[in-house]
Length: 633
Image 1 (spheres, rainbow, N blue to C red):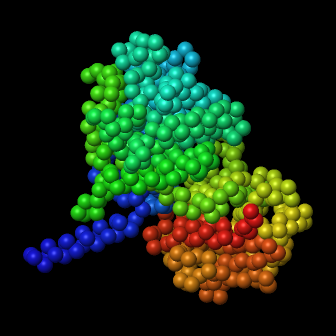
Image 2: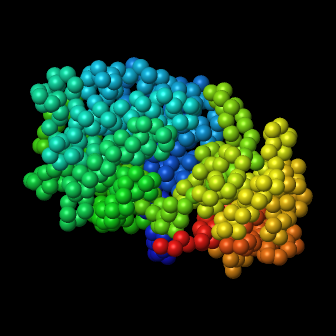
Image 3: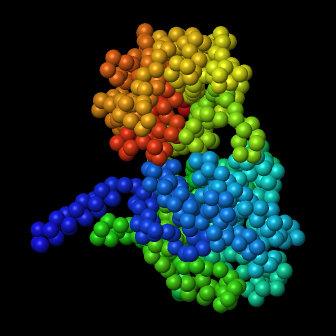
């Protein structure tokens, strides 16, 4: 018996050690899936579930581990019927809180193309259309809170609204989305601190509302956190030329300055009531601190905030781990210090006073803290290599590869190897890796020429069209070859991801590749029957000069390469050259006979865990960034 106990102790210790080698985001995600193994807390569709699922989505997209996606799907399927109805959801309540979980529906629909998730999302979008509004057009927080806008609501509804509008072509909605943030800042901004009060009653009738301003009494930290996260989450979806986008960025910068000024100078964290510091009863609060770290880090990474906010985020994040994160004997990570549910009005009545907010007890592994910590952790992890390609642009060709299909709305859209595609065909995971290295991911819809290539550090040509895929297929002609080769010669990095014979154009592409001594063979190797993945396996030696961490990858149905100088092989499988590179003038060319790095084989959902395609994608981007000539200062 003693030996068995010792063995168990040893095994638990081993699990703990392995857990500690994972990033904090994954350790927190694993805790969430452990303590809520059967279902997230609560019997009803709720925002508490939504914030945890947003954290898990972020972890999945950064780690490419399928278990996080599977958990999200399981959580949504608990509520969403095959006809798209949402169990326990009541549109007639008109509560913005119910919109937040809908972001999981948008993810699932765009990844899986399953109709029920779209139908359920449409229900939430219909609620937004019918949501009661103040005379100025601000959404009521809930039907039972007439004429009231709460900061919470900006995170609950607007990121879903922006994602939906972007994905399903409702561009006119961005005006209304922007107005919610603009109205809330106009009415709730404290002129002394620049912070925002939790709630505003347009009618001034509520007992908690100031009779002159309609504002609640306190500057509650998590409310400002919801609002700040809402801003950085809607901005990526805003059309670049939208006239109100610049207003939202200005609001974010004003709020960020106020949040930074309100932090505890010693710890770098934030108090439950932001402007009262260490006044008796006040306490440093975990969820708001995580939210501010998330907003600062993402704001800088996306270019909305200046770099000076990174040290603030870094100090606060380290303090979060020191003050709020604990690891138990089994290696499970727990977050303490998160205030429980908070609001104003209702029954029992909440008056919004300092005494009310500071009387709220903190909870270990409270959903808001768990979700916000995952979000903050992923953003901090994404900063590790940000300087490597900061400010550079990688262009993805959508001229030679320009297939279209009708989406769920009936609109014809480009598809197949596009940055913003989340399904198997897309490059969204590759895009995130490029973004993690500081590069902007943009699309070139026109023919490449000296002008549009000049702005790019890297240019990707993938799977050039043939007539069976695109009746209007565009071929790589002599003017394109001249422009591309001149650009490479001057320092550009060209990435060519071809396909196997019968699925891509070879003749014109090979005229371009001949410039650097590379030719794609018109063949197709690694034919795979069903899910016999070993037929597509390629082992990578540990001394490979590009793929430093990937040891075994899956590439099926690809064309091999023939080389002449200056090209050199970079990955050989038996007698077949799989990957090659070439120096051409000041630039570099990378070539492989398969799109390879698309979501189907990088997002973790399909391949067995012993395949390293996601690692290979990270390795490639790391190597490509190093090929970009450094700009002289």
